[in-house]
Image (cartoon, rainbow, N blue to C red; front, side):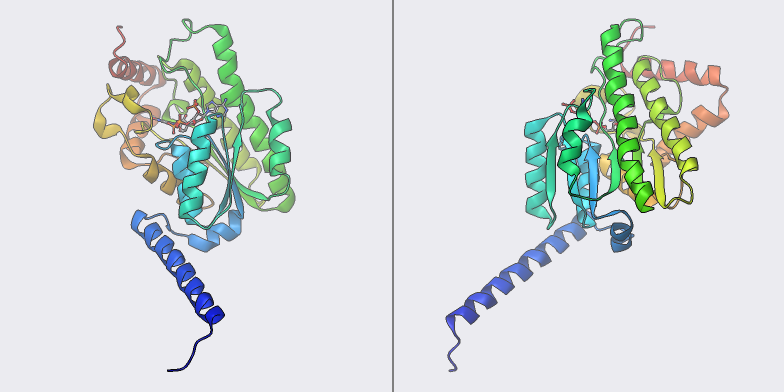
Length: 306
Ligand SMILES: NC(=O)c1ccc[n+]([C@@H]2O[C@H](COP(=O)([O-])OP(=O)(O)OC[C@H]3O[C@@H](n4cnc5c(N)ncnc54)[C@H](OP(=O)(O)O)[C@@H]3O)[C@@H](O)[C@H]2O)c1
Protein backbone atom coordinates (compact mmCIF):
# COMPACT_ATOMS: atom_id res chain seq x y z
CA UNK A 1 0.00 0.00 0.00
CA UNK A 2 1.30 3.47 -0.85
CA UNK A 3 2.33 5.59 2.11
CA UNK A 4 0.37 8.84 2.50
CA UNK A 5 2.19 11.60 4.37
CA UNK A 6 0.76 12.88 7.67
CA UNK A 7 0.43 16.52 6.46
CA UNK A 8 -1.48 15.25 3.41
CA UNK A 9 -3.80 13.21 5.62
CA UNK A 10 -4.35 16.18 7.94
CA UNK A 11 -5.03 18.48 4.95
CA UNK A 12 -7.48 15.96 3.51
CA UNK A 13 -9.30 15.64 6.82
CA UNK A 14 -9.47 19.42 7.14
CA UNK A 15 -10.85 19.79 3.60
CA UNK A 16 -13.41 17.04 4.24
CA UNK A 17 -14.51 18.69 7.49
CA UNK A 18 -14.80 22.10 5.83
CA UNK A 19 -16.77 20.62 2.91
CA UNK A 20 -19.03 18.86 5.40
CA UNK A 21 -19.64 22.06 7.32
CA UNK A 22 -20.45 24.05 4.17
CA UNK A 23 -22.73 21.26 2.93
CA UNK A 24 -24.53 21.08 6.30
CA UNK A 25 -25.07 24.83 6.24
CA UNK A 26 -26.42 24.82 2.67
CA UNK A 27 -28.72 21.91 3.57
CA UNK A 28 -29.99 23.67 6.73
CA UNK A 29 -30.64 26.85 4.79
CA UNK A 30 -32.58 24.88 2.18
CA UNK A 31 -34.60 23.15 4.90
CA UNK A 32 -35.60 26.46 6.50
CA UNK A 33 -36.27 28.06 3.13
CA UNK A 34 -33.85 30.84 3.95
CA UNK A 35 -31.97 30.69 0.64
CA UNK A 36 -34.89 32.28 -1.18
CA UNK A 37 -34.78 34.05 -4.54
CA UNK A 38 -33.20 36.20 -5.91
CA UNK A 39 -30.06 34.86 -4.21
CA UNK A 40 -26.68 36.28 -5.14
CA UNK A 41 -28.03 39.06 -7.35
CA UNK A 42 -29.67 40.46 -4.24
CA UNK A 43 -26.36 40.27 -2.35
CA UNK A 44 -24.48 41.99 -5.20
CA UNK A 45 -27.07 44.76 -5.29
CA UNK A 46 -27.47 45.42 -1.56
CA UNK A 47 -24.45 43.81 0.12
CA UNK A 48 -21.97 43.18 1.51
CA UNK A 49 -23.28 44.42 4.88
CA UNK A 50 -26.83 44.93 6.12
CA UNK A 51 -27.61 46.97 9.21
CA UNK A 52 -30.75 45.75 10.97
CA UNK A 53 -32.19 47.57 13.97
CA UNK A 54 -34.30 45.88 16.65
CA UNK A 55 -32.91 42.40 15.98
CA UNK A 56 -32.30 41.12 19.53
CA UNK A 57 -35.45 39.17 20.29
CA UNK A 58 -35.48 35.55 19.07
CA UNK A 59 -39.14 35.70 18.02
CA UNK A 60 -38.96 39.24 16.56
CA UNK A 61 -39.17 40.40 12.96
CA UNK A 62 -35.69 41.96 13.16
CA UNK A 63 -34.05 38.61 13.88
CA UNK A 64 -36.09 37.05 11.08
CA UNK A 65 -34.70 39.67 8.68
CA UNK A 66 -31.22 38.91 10.04
CA UNK A 67 -31.57 35.14 9.45
CA UNK A 68 -32.90 35.55 5.92
CA UNK A 69 -30.18 38.04 5.05
CA UNK A 70 -27.55 35.72 6.53
CA UNK A 71 -29.02 32.98 4.34
CA UNK A 72 -28.40 35.25 1.34
CA UNK A 73 -24.77 35.72 2.38
CA UNK A 74 -24.91 39.17 4.02
CA UNK A 75 -22.63 40.23 6.84
CA UNK A 76 -24.72 41.79 9.58
CA UNK A 77 -24.49 44.80 11.86
CA UNK A 78 -27.28 44.31 14.39
CA UNK A 79 -28.36 47.22 16.57
CA UNK A 80 -30.56 46.89 19.64
CA UNK A 81 -30.92 48.13 23.18
CA UNK A 82 -31.20 44.58 24.61
CA UNK A 83 -27.50 43.67 25.01
CA UNK A 84 -27.63 40.08 26.33
CA UNK A 85 -30.22 38.98 23.81
CA UNK A 86 -28.34 40.66 20.98
CA UNK A 87 -25.13 38.83 21.90
CA UNK A 88 -27.03 35.52 21.91
CA UNK A 89 -28.55 36.21 18.46
CA UNK A 90 -25.13 37.13 17.07
CA UNK A 91 -23.67 33.85 18.37
CA UNK A 92 -26.54 31.85 16.82
CA UNK A 93 -25.99 33.51 13.45
CA UNK A 94 -22.21 33.01 13.51
CA UNK A 95 -22.67 29.36 14.40
CA UNK A 96 -25.08 28.67 11.56
CA UNK A 97 -23.86 30.89 8.71
CA UNK A 98 -20.42 31.66 7.29
CA UNK A 99 -20.84 35.41 7.81
CA UNK A 100 -19.55 38.22 10.01
CA UNK A 101 -21.91 39.53 12.67
CA UNK A 102 -21.34 42.77 14.55
CA UNK A 103 -23.70 43.28 17.50
CA UNK A 104 -24.01 46.96 18.47
CA UNK A 105 -25.76 47.62 21.77
CA UNK A 106 -27.29 51.07 21.61
CA UNK A 107 -30.27 53.09 22.80
CA UNK A 108 -31.59 54.56 19.55
CA UNK A 109 -33.72 56.96 21.59
CA UNK A 110 -30.64 58.89 22.65
CA UNK A 111 -30.12 62.27 20.96
CA UNK A 112 -26.46 61.46 20.29
CA UNK A 113 -26.73 57.79 19.29
CA UNK A 114 -25.00 58.42 15.94
CA UNK A 115 -21.83 59.43 17.81
CA UNK A 116 -21.61 55.84 19.06
CA UNK A 117 -22.95 54.10 15.99
CA UNK A 118 -20.90 55.70 13.22
CA UNK A 119 -17.45 54.70 14.51
CA UNK A 120 -18.70 51.11 14.76
CA UNK A 121 -19.75 51.01 11.10
CA UNK A 122 -17.02 53.29 9.65
CA UNK A 123 -15.01 50.38 8.19
CA UNK A 124 -17.92 48.56 6.49
CA UNK A 125 -20.17 49.29 3.51
CA UNK A 126 -23.79 49.22 4.62
CA UNK A 127 -25.59 48.42 1.37
CA UNK A 128 -28.89 47.59 3.04
CA UNK A 129 -30.52 49.34 5.98
CA UNK A 130 -33.48 47.71 7.69
CA UNK A 131 -35.11 50.15 10.13
CA UNK A 132 -37.19 47.79 12.23
CA UNK A 133 -36.80 48.73 15.92
CA UNK A 134 -39.70 50.20 17.82
CA UNK A 135 -40.73 51.09 21.32
CA UNK A 136 -44.20 51.48 22.76
CA UNK A 137 -45.48 50.84 26.31
CA UNK A 138 -46.88 47.32 26.52
CA UNK A 139 -50.17 48.46 28.04
CA UNK A 140 -50.80 50.77 25.03
CA UNK A 141 -52.35 53.67 26.97
CA UNK A 142 -54.70 56.07 25.20
CA UNK A 143 -53.18 59.34 23.97
CA UNK A 144 -54.37 61.49 26.86
CA UNK A 145 -53.63 58.81 29.45
CA UNK A 146 -49.98 58.51 28.45
CA UNK A 147 -47.64 61.07 30.01
CA UNK A 148 -45.93 63.58 27.77
CA UNK A 149 -42.42 62.28 28.52
CA UNK A 150 -43.43 58.87 27.14
CA UNK A 151 -44.89 60.48 23.99
CA UNK A 152 -41.62 62.35 23.44
CA UNK A 153 -39.48 59.29 24.16
CA UNK A 154 -41.50 57.32 21.60
CA UNK A 155 -40.95 60.06 19.03
CA UNK A 156 -37.21 59.85 19.67
CA UNK A 157 -37.08 56.08 19.13
CA UNK A 158 -39.69 55.67 16.40
CA UNK A 159 -39.43 58.92 14.42
CA UNK A 160 -36.20 60.78 15.19
CA UNK A 161 -33.97 57.68 15.04
CA UNK A 162 -35.60 56.50 11.78
CA UNK A 163 -34.88 59.88 10.20
CA UNK A 164 -31.29 59.91 11.47
CA UNK A 165 -30.56 56.36 10.24
CA UNK A 166 -32.20 56.80 6.85
CA UNK A 167 -30.49 60.16 6.29
CA UNK A 168 -27.02 59.02 7.39
CA UNK A 169 -26.77 55.65 5.66
CA UNK A 170 -29.03 56.72 2.77
CA UNK A 171 -26.72 59.60 1.83
CA UNK A 172 -23.77 57.22 1.60
CA UNK A 173 -25.84 54.94 -0.64
CA UNK A 174 -26.82 57.85 -2.89
CA UNK A 175 -23.11 58.78 -3.22
CA UNK A 176 -22.37 55.21 -4.30
CA UNK A 177 -25.55 55.12 -6.46
CA UNK A 178 -26.34 51.74 -4.91
CA UNK A 179 -28.22 50.39 -1.93
CA UNK A 180 -31.56 49.61 -0.36
CA UNK A 181 -33.57 50.83 2.62
CA UNK A 182 -36.43 48.93 4.23
CA UNK A 183 -38.64 50.86 6.65
CA UNK A 184 -40.85 48.68 8.85
CA UNK A 185 -44.05 50.52 9.56
CA UNK A 186 -47.35 48.77 10.41
CA UNK A 187 -50.97 48.55 9.36
CA UNK A 188 -51.37 51.03 12.23
CA UNK A 189 -49.30 53.46 10.14
CA UNK A 190 -51.68 53.21 7.19
CA UNK A 191 -54.69 54.29 9.21
CA UNK A 192 -55.33 56.00 12.54
CA UNK A 193 -55.56 53.31 15.22
CA UNK A 194 -57.26 54.23 18.50
CA UNK A 195 -55.99 52.69 21.77
CA UNK A 196 -52.48 52.75 20.34
CA UNK A 197 -52.71 56.24 18.89
CA UNK A 198 -49.17 57.41 19.65
CA UNK A 199 -47.67 54.27 18.08
CA UNK A 200 -50.01 54.68 15.11
CA UNK A 201 -48.87 58.30 14.63
CA UNK A 202 -45.18 57.24 14.87
CA UNK A 203 -45.81 54.54 12.28
CA UNK A 204 -47.58 57.04 9.98
CA UNK A 205 -44.46 59.22 10.24
CA UNK A 206 -42.27 56.31 9.13
CA UNK A 207 -44.62 55.47 6.30
CA UNK A 208 -44.76 58.98 4.83
CA UNK A 209 -41.00 59.46 5.25
CA UNK A 210 -40.37 56.27 3.29
CA UNK A 211 -43.04 56.86 0.69
CA UNK A 212 -41.75 60.34 -0.17
CA UNK A 213 -38.18 59.05 -0.17
CA UNK A 214 -39.13 56.28 -2.59
CA UNK A 215 -40.28 58.94 -5.06
CA UNK A 216 -37.34 61.28 -4.50
CA UNK A 217 -34.73 58.54 -4.95
CA UNK A 218 -36.13 57.01 -8.12
CA UNK A 219 -33.30 56.66 -10.63
CA UNK A 220 -30.66 57.14 -7.90
CA UNK A 221 -29.76 53.45 -7.66
CA UNK A 222 -31.11 53.32 -4.11
CA UNK A 223 -34.28 51.28 -3.61
CA UNK A 224 -36.75 52.12 -0.85
CA UNK A 225 -39.49 49.88 0.48
CA UNK A 226 -41.93 50.59 3.27
CA UNK A 227 -43.35 47.36 4.63
CA UNK A 228 -46.56 47.40 6.68
CA UNK A 229 -47.11 44.11 8.53
CA UNK A 230 -50.37 43.33 10.25
CA UNK A 231 -50.52 41.48 13.56
CA UNK A 232 -47.51 39.18 14.08
CA UNK A 233 -46.77 36.45 16.62
CA UNK A 234 -43.78 38.33 17.99
CA UNK A 235 -45.27 39.85 21.11
CA UNK A 236 -45.96 36.86 23.34
CA UNK A 237 -49.51 36.85 24.69
CA UNK A 238 -50.09 40.58 24.04
CA UNK A 239 -52.18 39.70 20.96
CA UNK A 240 -54.18 36.86 22.58
CA UNK A 241 -57.40 38.90 22.41
CA UNK A 242 -57.36 39.34 18.62
CA UNK A 243 -58.69 36.83 16.05
CA UNK A 244 -55.83 34.34 15.85
CA UNK A 245 -56.31 33.69 12.11
CA UNK A 246 -55.21 37.29 11.51
CA UNK A 247 -51.84 36.77 13.18
CA UNK A 248 -48.88 35.98 10.95
CA UNK A 249 -45.42 34.62 11.77
CA UNK A 250 -42.51 36.95 11.22
CA UNK A 251 -40.73 34.79 8.62
CA UNK A 252 -43.19 35.19 5.70
CA UNK A 253 -43.23 38.95 6.35
CA UNK A 254 -39.42 39.15 6.17
CA UNK A 255 -39.24 37.00 3.02
CA UNK A 256 -42.00 38.86 1.14
CA UNK A 257 -40.39 42.17 2.09
CA UNK A 258 -36.90 41.19 0.90
CA UNK A 259 -38.29 39.68 -2.29
CA UNK A 260 -40.24 42.88 -3.04
CA UNK A 261 -37.38 45.34 -2.46
CA UNK A 262 -36.32 46.80 -5.81
CA UNK A 263 -39.30 45.29 -7.63
CA UNK A 264 -42.28 47.19 -6.27
CA UNK A 265 -43.11 50.00 -3.90
CA UNK A 266 -43.39 52.32 -2.20
CA UNK A 267 -45.53 50.35 0.29
CA UNK A 268 -45.84 46.59 0.71
CA UNK A 269 -48.64 45.08 2.79
CA UNK A 270 -47.33 41.56 3.42
CA UNK A 271 -49.69 38.57 3.49
CA UNK A 272 -53.08 37.99 1.87
CA UNK A 273 -55.18 38.48 5.01
CA UNK A 274 -53.41 41.70 5.84
CA UNK A 275 -53.81 42.91 2.23
CA UNK A 276 -57.57 42.24 2.32
CA UNK A 277 -58.00 43.83 5.76
CA UNK A 278 -56.05 46.97 4.87
CA UNK A 279 -57.79 47.31 1.47
CA UNK A 280 -61.13 47.32 3.27
CA UNK A 281 -59.97 49.79 5.90
CA UNK A 282 -58.10 52.23 3.66
CA UNK A 283 -59.87 51.98 0.27
CA UNK A 284 -63.44 50.80 0.74
CA UNK A 285 -64.50 52.52 3.96
CA UNK A 286 -64.79 56.30 4.37
CA UNK A 287 -62.14 57.54 6.85
CA UNK A 288 -64.63 58.13 9.65
CA UNK A 289 -66.06 54.62 9.36
CA UNK A 290 -62.54 53.18 9.10
CA UNK A 291 -61.35 54.76 12.35
CA UNK A 292 -64.59 53.76 14.10
CA UNK A 293 -64.33 50.15 12.94
CA UNK A 294 -60.65 49.78 13.84
CA UNK A 295 -61.37 51.45 17.19
CA UNK A 296 -63.93 48.73 17.96
CA UNK A 297 -61.50 46.07 16.71
CA UNK A 298 -58.75 47.35 19.01
CA UNK A 299 -61.07 47.70 21.99
CA UNK A 300 -62.18 44.07 21.60
CA UNK A 301 -58.59 42.83 21.11
CA UNK A 302 -57.27 44.73 24.12
CA UNK A 303 -60.35 44.06 26.27
CA UNK A 304 -60.91 47.80 26.73
CA UNK A 305 -64.32 49.04 27.81
CA UNK A 306 -65.93 51.46 25.36
N1 LIG B 1 -45.74 42.55 16.31
C1 LIG B 1 -46.68 43.05 15.53
O1 LIG B 1 -47.86 42.65 15.58
C2 LIG B 1 -46.33 44.14 14.55
C3 LIG B 1 -47.29 44.55 13.63
C4 LIG B 1 -46.99 45.51 12.70
C5 LIG B 1 -45.72 46.08 12.68
N2 LIG B 1 -44.79 45.70 13.59
C6 LIG B 1 -43.48 46.34 13.53
O2 LIG B 1 -42.49 45.36 13.28
C7 LIG B 1 -41.24 45.78 13.85
C8 LIG B 1 -40.70 44.66 14.71
O3 LIG B 1 -41.65 44.38 15.71
P1 LIG B 1 -41.60 43.10 16.63
O4 LIG B 1 -42.98 42.76 16.98
O5 LIG B 1 -40.71 42.09 16.02
O6 LIG B 1 -40.98 43.79 17.93
P2 LIG B 1 -39.75 43.49 18.84
O7 LIG B 1 -39.23 42.10 18.72
O8 LIG B 1 -40.15 44.02 20.17
O9 LIG B 1 -38.66 44.41 18.16
C9 LIG B 1 -38.33 45.65 18.58
C10 LIG B 1 -36.90 45.63 19.06
O10 LIG B 1 -36.47 47.00 19.18
C11 LIG B 1 -35.80 47.13 20.43
N3 LIG B 1 -35.81 48.50 20.93
C12 LIG B 1 -36.77 49.12 21.65
N4 LIG B 1 -36.37 50.34 22.00
C13 LIG B 1 -35.12 50.49 21.49
C14 LIG B 1 -34.18 51.55 21.54
N5 LIG B 1 -34.43 52.67 22.20
N6 LIG B 1 -32.99 51.38 20.93
C15 LIG B 1 -32.70 50.24 20.28
N7 LIG B 1 -33.55 49.20 20.20
C16 LIG B 1 -34.75 49.33 20.80
C17 LIG B 1 -36.60 46.23 21.35
O11 LIG B 1 -35.90 45.97 22.54
P3 LIG B 1 -36.79 45.71 23.88
O12 LIG B 1 -37.52 44.42 23.64
O13 LIG B 1 -35.78 45.66 24.97
O14 LIG B 1 -37.73 46.89 23.99
C18 LIG B 1 -36.77 44.99 20.46
O15 LIG B 1 -35.66 44.14 20.53
C19 LIG B 1 -41.55 47.06 14.64
O16 LIG B 1 -41.18 48.19 13.88
C20 LIG B 1 -43.04 47.01 14.82
O17 LIG B 1 -43.60 48.29 14.97
C21 LIG B 1 -45.06 44.74 14.53
